[in-house]
Image (tube, rainbow, N blue to C red; front, side):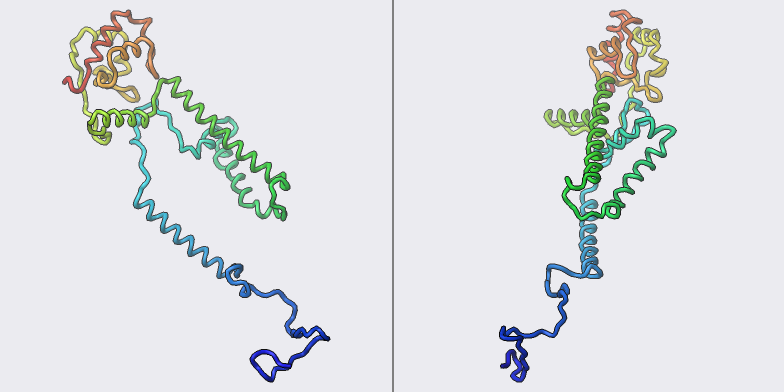
Length: 289
């Protein structure tokens, strides 16, 4: 009996089962028998991964060119009150480097040693953990290290941010980006133009330099920090133009109780002298020139 396209095909039956006998060895089929399900890693799979990676990289570059990341505010070396902080995803490492055994004399251990061991262990993990079990509760060592690292990163991030907030509160500081957002919001509500911080600030001069309050400022030794013309020096801000930033009541409070790095003068000046000095300083405005 013949089957197939060839009429002269010889058919060999096995017993009475009428099953066609195969002369092919009993080996599993290659990946071509399962299109779309499996393929050779080299070069087929690897080449497609490279092509997808190139497309993603080109798309990412186009995105960064079209929407560049915003730059931070210009650095001010005279602002000694500024607290530098990294981006949130580096806060855990920033806090980690504050501890004594990974900083100062051990800075190489903190910056190269510990991160090198961590990233090295991550790269060697496939070679060190060769077990076939993939359920995390059946892999106690790998799972414990993963959870420990995750908890450490979260804890260090929270501690770093909490310390930053307490430092701002203790110094009476407001972050610069918060101040700019508030001024921009106030300008928008008033229908005014948004403040442009790229323009150089006008240089203010003393208003009523012969006022008796100037002698009070010299008596309080203000000129030793803010300079003889009160235009500031080094990290100490200028008092010229301070009337544009603070009103009289705020100035009275600053002079009386101090603020930031400025000492308090309630024990050196009388209430009348503080009031007279604050009144004069409130007149120090750029528009008043």
